[in-house]
Image 1 (cartoon, rainbow, N blue to C red):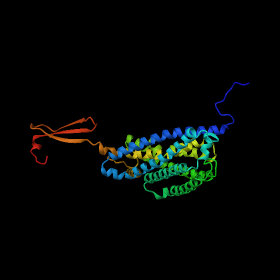
Image 2: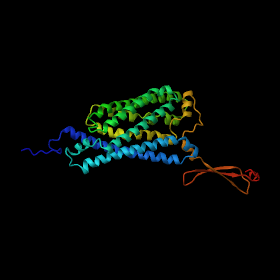
Image 3: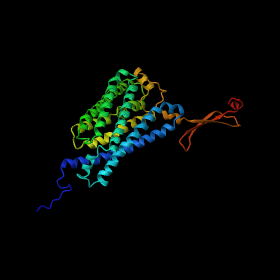
Image 4: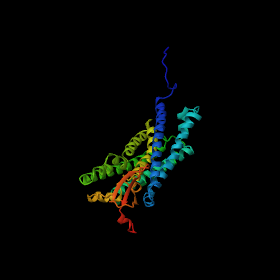
Length: 350
């Protein structure tokens, strides 16, 4: 008699074990990405409310987009978490085990709700990406015509997929796949196309501005981080992996589905975070880059409006030369103290 033992249940197909592990690790990484997303959102929100009124008005649209995206994605994340609780804890004795419960309840109303909100978050993220492409390409409607068509096609197929997922069956291998794959392909194609043309634009701007823009500003607007965030390159790569694994019904597909599902919100949050920190492309900067010139007075950080030195003038009875002293307060605000001469003191306008 052999003394070897196996951790896998008897008669359990290996593919089912891989699928269940895929779901498990997908939920773990989804939770990590969701935590990063929430940090980015609240950090951006803190910066936003620290701006002056005119800047808050200018960036209100970004915060509306960010808040809406987080709201819908939060519903999707918690719907998935509840499903994991039911399949692994509350109903682990379900016929077919946890995986059997997962497949049998993938069309439950709360799962359909989670799918719907994830799709809405995806629509918001894709819309922001197209809008940023429009800004970076200096308001060219011709450039974004094809992405808009892809966007409309993606929305249509997503709605059909949502209807099919509400019917009994498996979201990964059932009839929903027949509509889910075209939706995933259209969405990923949109991301890849917009990513490509944004990268092309940024690289072209880097070549034009390399000799006239300060090195630090060049790094901010055309560096690696700018390319990765503005183009949503990681999101596009992850989308390709998701589309392939989902289309081929591979058991590792759910892991990438869960991660991609939260990246539809995380990627826009990175863009909004750069906007709130004054490191994103604006219409003025694009105009200068297109013309091949750089104004050294360009404000490269919107938060400078909150960090300008505070000047005080103090009068002294004795005559003295005008002096300038600079010091830092405990809060980190630079204070400039100007001493005023006796002659200036007698001037009532001083």
